[in-house]
Length: 143
Image: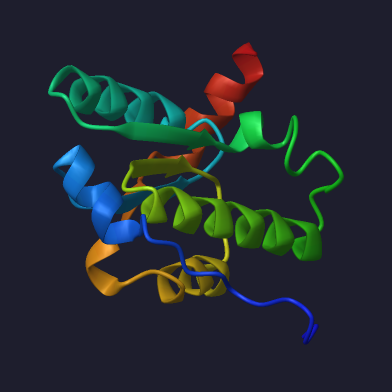
């Protein structure tokens, strides 16, 4: 750890952001196989929440790989780093008072646990999109 880096607290904090938005910050983490429908379900939920006046942001696995994580491959170590980075972004979004939907394959329970542990328990919900592997393979073959 670098001793020259300190966390700065600011007058406009997480509680202020949440009160301003009149909502509880939350991270809803969608996990499942590739082509299982994670992004589709997360997008539909975000649309519903937005229509109801909630402040949201959707972190999509493919979209994040175009920028924040474009330097990473798909080795186990790179997948772990991908999820770690996204977890930190989701935490920052929660600090901003947002309801964050995250759609990531995230196959390793230990990686999802790492994200779970950086957030208060009441701010993390994990949703496993349980689609049969054969269905996912069929969908991928159509792409």
